[in-house]
Structures are given as structure tokens and as C-alpha cells.
Image (cartoon, rainbow, N blue to C red; front, side, top):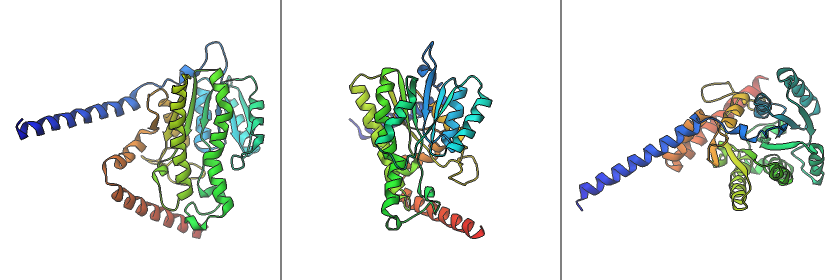
Length: 312
């Protein structure tokens, strides 16, 4: 076969593969959500949202109530949760809510209490949203690994990984009994590995692997449980004090976008299409280049944070 013809075939195959990928990406963000599949006919279906007192979790609570679910509101601050509950009652009079107070930074055997509080509610959706970086210590969100205390490392892993795994372990039998069920785990773009966010990045990497393993396990066992790993970029929240912009949605917008991806067939997906645009660089640019870009960006964010602190 002539060399030019070989290159012609290779070019056509590459172009075809690119078109297929573009079609898949477009379908991901244009198809309607399948969330309604988890509202059982004739029953009051419940969703469990961790970290529901503000940010993306609060957005999930609003969106799930708006889309016909009752919601268990998890958090560690009962006063905040009561305010959220009152908001939801006013905005969605037909939706039921129940508060579950538990500190995700200190998971223990007492987590069985959560199962007891759920009782016989028809739970079909679990949103593992709670998480956070070093900002949970009321300090700089950017820290060198050697500057963490033993307790801080443990707390970050508890909040971002251990609590999620333990809660999923406890609630999975309920979701299986009420199948079909949905488990949505909120991960982060930081899972690729970011400087000065070492522990947070590692914990979110665990979320990705855990989600993949659980999804395969559910398929292997013939369980009708959809497991989704939603990748999130920068979002304007109380913990992430940034200006809302083209690439920075509010927590509510982010939650709505994530729920719109339900049923897309992708195990791991960027929930917000504008975050996906930012993430394309991870697919096409050399790793070293992206690492240098990340270092530059994180240094700038650290500088801005320090300037804000000095003005206080």
C-alpha cells in the first residue's frame, strides 16, 4: 500500500474518532436528565444530601425539592440546617425535609444513628457532597504538606473520603432495597494533583477510584444502582470566596448542572460544561505544561488570599 494512502486512512480515522468524541461530549450536556427515574411511582422518594447547609450542598437541597424529592439535610451545625429547612419549606411547600446532624470530620461507629434516623423512608438518592480543603481550619486554603498537623491530615481525609465511604457502606443496603437508586459522589479538578492542596487532592483522587470500583461492583452484582463521579471546578461558595464568573458558577447552578448529568452513561463527568471547557487542557496538553500552569495559578491565588487577609 502506498504511503500517502496509509496517511490518508490514518487521517480519516483520526477525524472520525474526533467527531465521535465531540458527539459524545455534546450528548452529555444536551440530553435530558434521567433523575426522575429515581422517583418511585406512588411513593414519596427521599434523597440524602451531605453538607447541605450551604454551597453546592444547599443547591442540591433546593434542586431536589424542586424536582419532586423529599430531602434529608445533613450537616454539623443545627442552627444553619434549621434556617435551610425553613427556606425549603417556604419555597417548596409540598416537599418534606428532615435534619440529620453529624460531624463528617469525626466519623465513628455512632454513624449507625443515621440509618436509624432515616427509618423506613423510601431513600433512592445519595449525594455525597460534603468536603473541603484547609479552609475548614479557618486558616490559609494553601498549605505545604509539612505544615499540616497529624490531626489536620486526619480531619481532611475524614471530611473528603472516610465519611463518604462509611456513609455509602451504611446506606447502600437501603438503596438496593429501594432500587433503582443513585449514588452521586462530588469530586474535584484538584484530584489530578495540585501543589499546596496535597491532602485535599489525594482525598479527591480516592473519591474517583472509589466511585469507579463501586460502579463496577454494582454492575458485577446485577444491582440497579447508578454510581456517578462528578468533577467540579471552582465554584462560588462561602468557603471559596471568589467572584462569580463565566467559569465560576454559584453552588446552586453547579448542583443543577450535576443533576442534569444523571443517566448520561458516563461514570466520571464534569458536571458543569464550562468546567469541562477548562478541563480540555488536561486531555490535550503535555503533563509538564499543565503542571506549570497549575503552579502559576495556585501561586497567584495564594497571593490574592494573603492580600485579602492583610486588608482585614
